[in-house]
Image (cartoon, rainbow, N blue to C red):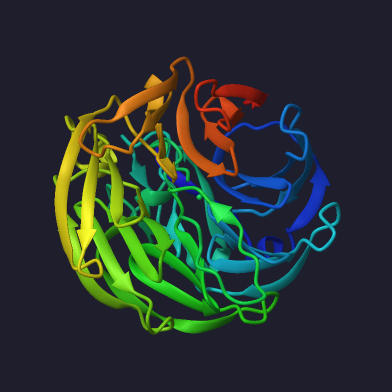
Length: 400
């Protein structure tokens, strides 16, 4: 028996972006919010468009098919999405009739998914046949030496469906005349000034999006760490890596400059930053090479983000994404649910609310409303009254 690759040929891949009827959430991942719409990635399938103009009754309006999509970002009416090896720009001027506006081919590394049965060997990948969408266990006659793992291309753990790293960076920097969407803390896409930044493990890709609908590849540079998430704040890039937080200056936006790092124990860790404080969740998990640390770290940043001091740490159950709005911190604590804290005193957090019976993944706080995505589906909360934080609406996941 061998794991045999299932291919989508390049012609099919590059003619597949289209609008279709709304469909249930099955494997929701990264999220992005702008105006009255929340966009939710359906892992490697496409993007759900949720109308939240009536927060108490969110509507699943339509679906944009984008094979291989994991990450998204939004500038004005231009939606950027990965599609396996390509970067696709989708025009959302008419939200009910989205259309592909531009495609930059072969910009991302060729990666393959894991197989369900990892106890058998893999058949070689033939990249010229297309992208690998899955593996199928088959009995195959072959005279070649068996390989335990595919030798090329490599598997990107950041896109692992089964690790719940499905993953949307942070509030993007502003530029005159532009309107950026707001993403969750698990993002690998971020916007600042005229640039779209996309990080993939050790490589940061940069695209000029001054013409929002026709981005151009600006270049790339290597990053000093196994990067998992990207957060843009105050003219800086904050990378969450498996070993710490890295900070790069965007004083020259098309040439990010490495400034400093804050190291921690090997662990998965998204980060958000506000007013010289960084909030980092550390999660145990096999993909992060750590089995026993689950906590929230609060770090004081000073000297233009070149010096860091750990202020406090708090035990968590299985933390994923998080969001900050003023003195309110929202933490997705995995199977322990959503937790809301008052962080006015960084050394003594005060829990304001908890919602324990849901599986949480990432959040976006915005103007008194919180958008939360998790294994159970999409939840919308009203936190305008911190003494009465409550669920307003919900779209559940359909279990398969």
